[in-house]
Length: 136
Image 1: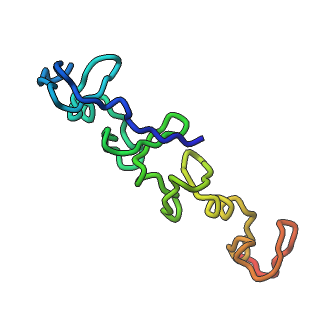
Image 2: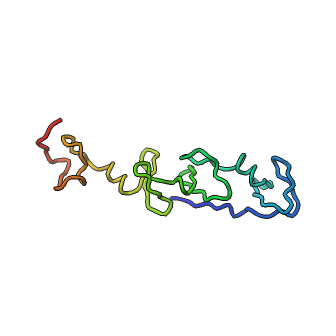
Image 3: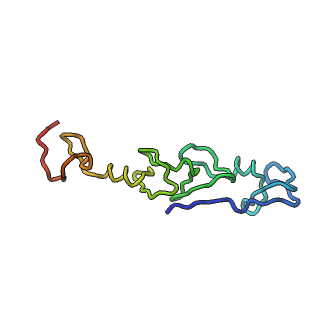
């Protein structure tokens, strides 16, 4: 299951200080991290999850996607083969890679080793029991 996270707990401070840099948060946006007020800059630097694709922190200004304890920026959540954006598309995982349904089915299909082709690329029906007249 893919989860979208928006940091809805970003609020404006009346009077408080950032837990990390001690900056006055009066009238500024901040995030509560483990119950402590943290300015947006320090949250990105110290608290934000890192994107598994680009390795940059996911700031409170962007959408965060998570799947099985891994995190992505919305724009980084793409098929490992064709790079199609998958934030709003069905996807599969294979060997810890995120793949669109089409690429995953191509990779899982039996292969005609004589032609090094997948059956869906052939013009006629083929199965793993079929015999190819071409050899390697």
